[in-house]
Length: 269
Image (cartoon, rainbow, N blue to C red):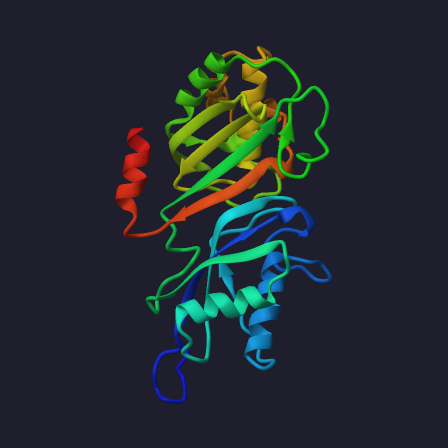
């Protein structure tokens, strides 16, 4: 634990950020790449007169993936009111990042390790051709879709399953068992989009994008309605095949202790 000169513990900030992931090489810092983590750390270091400040995120998002509610934490060597921290950071943020909430957290709060659930949204544009104004913020699927088939398939995702078939080969986590509390689809006729949402206790590398690609094939009749049940059993990434584009994926919300009732309500929907 880091202490101030006064002997007090250095305040820990919990900050929620939204970002357009289009021009970032993902959340996590990488050498010679523009990342969300690197951009925020640069701003905090500038605020701290050149002394480096490390941030920790609830998890990584890949290149091109967006966030509506990514959560980070960091320790800062001055006691600044949470509101002032929000204002100061936003004054240094580029136009594709916004700090939307800030609070002083408990000293042992950790943005990643205290997570109890996450919500991801995936948006699919259904136009015959790629919409130039949506191409960076949606996936694109111009083929016929049967909503009932998709809704039936989504029910098979609920509960605890081994998602080995839906984990990209680049992942390093051995335990592929995850619990899905909510899996929904909305056909937005006004905007000609299909909007998926998934709430679970954790998600594997590229898992949501692979699930969406599979659901679109089910909706188009290229797979059986209950093909998820087979894919859970075979544990073979090659049989799930497709991965939806990063452009349609959004980290919508991260849940922490104290928000269990919110997650329970979601699971009862």
